[in-house]
Image 1: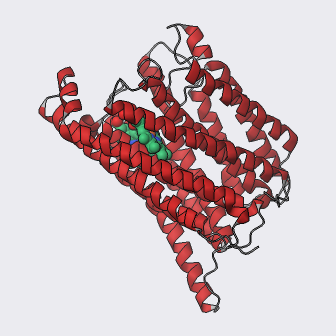
Image 2: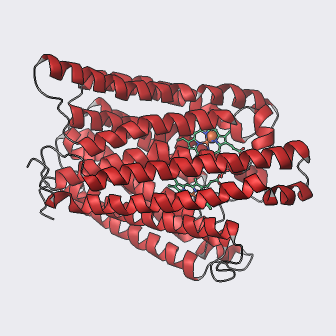
Image 3: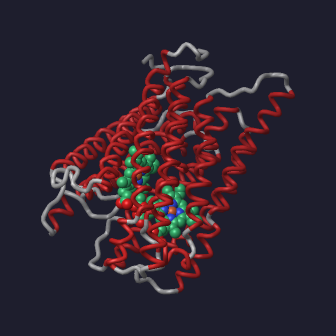
Length: 472
Ligand code: HEM
Ligand code: HEM
Ligand SMILES: [Fe+2]
């Protein structure tokens, strides 16, 4: 692939993106293994157990997204500030150290899998905190590299031009990296452990990561449709205020049943119910800017000027997906009166899938397209047939999985919770209920559809430089 990049920071970004895509693929394969085990529990029994497949599935998810986000930050920094990433050599070393650590962690997950019930397992195999299970040695290494990354962002932003986009990125990165540290402590109380663990999980996905989506959307819309910077940055500040305003105390929706004081019921109910609002704002932001630029282009007699059609398509998917997955599917179960029935059922999993996909996977894929465009020096990147297959199959697959899991979750809520009163026996009866099992069957089918879409996506990203449809 002919490399047309002017900045070393952007080259480093492409390294991060490459690892991200590989881990995305690994995530999907692990998901398929886990989904098969739901239906055929003896599949790979004692060779590769469900607990391990599930753990690798969701840790790969978080790690590929963090990689893609760090990559996106390195991609936009030189363009926004007008200068090379400060300390780029060290930043590249950071990438190598991080990737070596991630590789060792994944190999240990897959080959060693489990250890004795003592501190050595926490230090060398996994920490047992869902989504961020890296063993302690790697945890410390990750924190060091992330703090280093923060240093590069700040040094570059202070030395170069500091746009609104860069300022928000700086503030958000402090919060994002700082929160990771909250998941590293250790207490003997499971309630306290969960209390702090949510600071990472919830405050990442419902505050700091969402702000990053705002940053990427702002940056991307300027590049893709030539959106007006003042308008885009105005939206960004509004979104930041709304996201933090509702997201921080919205964390109460995870404090309903873990042993925290009862006032969290009211706080969690109120603030988390407000959380869909910024997502509506983000949706309006993208469609408004798009409509406005279309209007200007028409008035000036030029055709619609989309510099990167696949990226724009994925940005739209993000606007819809974020609103549906986080806003609607999140709102469904956010009030304690509802959550008491739905807590920890497949309903939660339905929301988890559509939210992570809709809010994050989509926009990051959009950024991948911006990166292949830049790397190949393409002026106008059009949608290819492979690109259409990719976006269609992935969307049908993930939305299909979500609907299937929602049906399973509904069956579970009805039988296990409402009818049988959440007893141990109720759990097993509902696991055998027809709707539950059929939903899981469809989840597996839709998972295969998602994987097929992913194959098209990789093919499309890799062949962008060779496709003659694009204007160089
Ligand atoms: C992009 C943003 C979001 C992502 C990625 C996300 C993802 C998730 C995931 C993965 C879980 C399951 C956690 C676990 O393993 O226990 C979860 C739980 C939950 N989410 Fe979200 N979420 C997002 C936004 C929202 C929003 C905006 C709301 C409410 C309006 C919401 C409400 C909830 C609730 C109430 C739970 C707890 C479910 C239970 O009790 O089992 N989420 N979320
Ligand atoms: C090939 C497609 C996929 C399959 C077959 C699959 C399957 C699974 C399975 C079986 C679980 C364990 C659920 C449980 O313990 O009840 C799971 C969990 C999870 N998956 Fe996937 N998955 C796929 C793709 C994805 C994608 C694309 C995302 C997000 C971008 C994702 C995010 C998650 C999350 C957040 C959880 C934890 C949910 C929770 O605890 O509530 N998965 N997945
Ligand atoms: Fe939350």
